Image 1 (tube, rainbow, N blue to C red):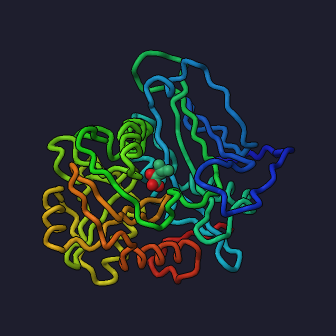
Image 2: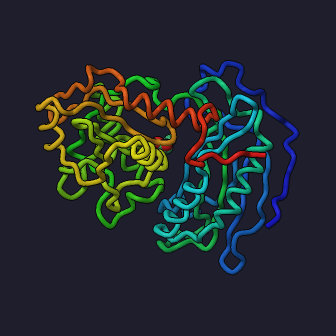
Length: 355
Ligand code: COI
């Protein structure tokens, strides 16, 4: 499919101070858009000026949340090369989410091609300071003007770009986490494994509760027994217990994170045993009391690695590694960001160059 280009005559000023980017507040000059209609398929692929879009107030996305999204990043390597990190994983997952939400499949190779075109046009927006990148947000929304609950027959697939710094204001400093025992994020048979707005909408109340109590995020327990650990905030979670690595097994209610997969592969390549299994909060608390809980960290595209310095489970406080970043958390962060920015040799073949 051809990708049309529509020139933007009003280019914005690029941010002067990269230390003040924050996360997801600024957007670049262009976006990618293509439309879907039953019988016609995906069509009218274009790169056009970033601008508000017009939708009917009855558009189905507003009412029933039939939509999906992805998140990945572009980086500028020292010699000016532009790198994407494992984009194939994101578009593969987009189609897994699409399947769950009854949204038509996209052509993954074409989506990567469109993204590469867009990044090439917007390459001057990629920030270069350590810890910064160009965050890429592909998403699909249901656009039929209709109030019945059924799959839409029209959709929009868009990609927008945002120069970003750290996701959490703490940066790589350990965050305090509240173990959430009232609200749940997802249940068996639900949509927890899909990257869809509803999962994030369901998480906001618990996040607000955690903030009010002085915590940055929550540790999610499973939606059935409220006993087994699932995710931390919007991230996957890892534990270092007595030198071994534990992470919850993908069970249908956990998102299959790209950074999760990269972390597991790196750890295995370094000779660590990585146990993907059910982990109860009781087991974790016991490990803590026996002095075996050495590190906890979250993994996600936005923050990459987010060390946990403290957990509060029903008033029982666990201070992890004296509230300091652990050696392994630091090593994984340095390695993944090093590969992403082209400063470390990419022996895993994870990066894709934009050229
Ligand atoms: C992550 O990368 O950690 C995410 O889940 C995306 C986030 C901005 C919601």
